[in-house]
Structure formats: structure tokens, C-alpha cells
Image (cartoon, rainbow, N blue to C red; front, side):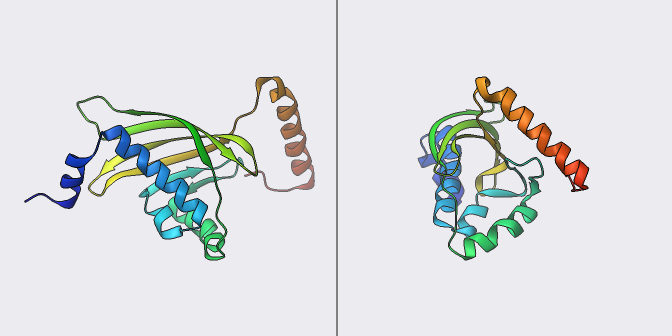
Length: 161
């Protein structure tokens, strides 16, 4: 007798499609402020790396940060525009990595990247990294602004971590 996961695996189009659908479900759940569905897409030991230098969270810490927003019905919408996803070679097919270009009403074009692992429950996100896609022509000005911000924080004694 097949387990549900085994039966779904047989019916799936490909490991790439299955892994990509997890990332899509994560984005869709965040947009609906559906915390349980959002966090179900991650492994228990997942890491979330956000756009701020201080945002390097365990899943438990990120859940503690995000759940009050979700409870108020406030999510975030990142619409995938393009994604590259690779499943590890045939000897494993248990790890996948991806990068994606996303559109955000708040931030414009951003970039996501991450790693998925095939678990007994299917593909799960092991790590997700959200970053700003800064045009090279603006990189110097952005770096200068960040350096000034960090210097100001250091002078006022504000924590930088």
C-alpha cells in the first residue's frame, strides 16, 4: 500500500515542479496572512535571512516576529516574476536550490534565494534569503548611505547586530 506522499510523488510532474510549488505556497500564504500555511512550508530548523543585516532568524524567532502581523491579517506580497530552480543530481534528488526575482509593492524588484530539502512530508524550505536587487550604477551610493547609517548608530551607541 502506498503512503499518501508516495502516491503524490508518482502523480507529480517532476521534483522541480514539486519543489517550486512549495515556494509558491509560501508566497501565497504570506500574501493571505496565513501563518499556519506559511510556516508549514519550512523545515523545523529552517533559517530566514531578511533584508536588514540583523535579520538572520531561526524559524522559531521568525515565527515570533511574523505571527502578530499575520494575526492582524497583515501579510506581505512578493510576486514571483522569474525563478531558477535546480534539484541535486540523480544520486540524491533530495536537495534543491533556487533564486527568484520578485515584485513587491513596497520595495519594487527584490530577489529571493534558498534551499529546499525533501523530507518525509515532501519538499520543505530549509533556508530562505530575501535581498534587495540594487543596480550596479547605484551600489556605490547605497553602500555610502549604509556606511553613514552604521557610523551614526555606532556614535549614538545603538546596537548594530
